[in-house]
Image: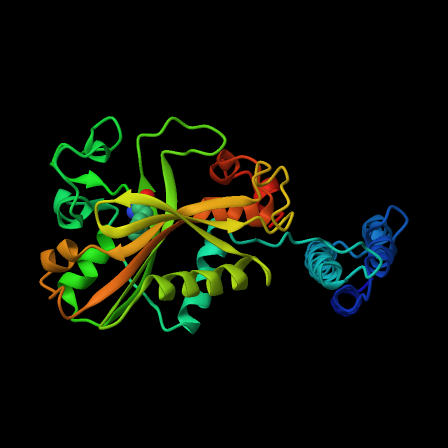
Length: 338
Ligand code: PHE
């Protein structure tokens, strides 16, 4: 065994290791050279036959062959493993069942507000907004609500330490709009309201209303009834009737409560309408001239109608939701149905 043979052999072995195409080829290279019956042990055994003067050099080269080949095998193995990992990651099993991504849905209250907004926008109404935390001026005084009116009672209204309150209705938005805008006015104002109501199947301390306000030179109860009827039919269905019942609100005169005929039974009476054939929506009326004066409008020049509607009420009858509390529990199994 000559020194040059070992140098050539090292080159050959390292070359084979580096070009191994698969881990099994690499293993074959290892066995061929480094294995127990491989070439290297044989060379080691043959060392004793080498001329004593050449022995150190041949021994050194044999060790170098062993170390460098081992390093070449290790680095090639690592490269092959990385490549096969990347290949696996790229592989796509087309027989796997698809992964279902659940779809989100809009909250029923949001859906009603969006539909109502689009229906009223076709009638020329724009959307106005106001704060949930209101002044007594906007929520009561300017709306002509007398000091002794029961709705002002802290048993019914949430007052804050600052003297402000959580609005009990969306009607203060009427005041905010009229204080800031000359007539004519044609707005709706959807939003959250708060009352100290004990919670049950139809009451919640927190609920939504859509306020409507229309001010112009000539506006009548007939406009109110016609517009609400149009809305009701767009929202609930072609044959819905609307009914006014006399009522009182400080900010409208005359005032009514209004009902939609039950869209489920067509007015014959069913569980949804509690067998009355009618579903109570909220209040409305002709804007009280005192309110017009309060915002600086001239009641001799302009007049108007206003209405409120209970959003949860409409959601419940339209979607057949039996309990208002379901709308506030945020259970996605419930909400996902609408
Ligand atoms: N704000 C009244 C309520 O909450 C409803 C209403 C609005 C009545 C507008 C008349 C005019 O009950």
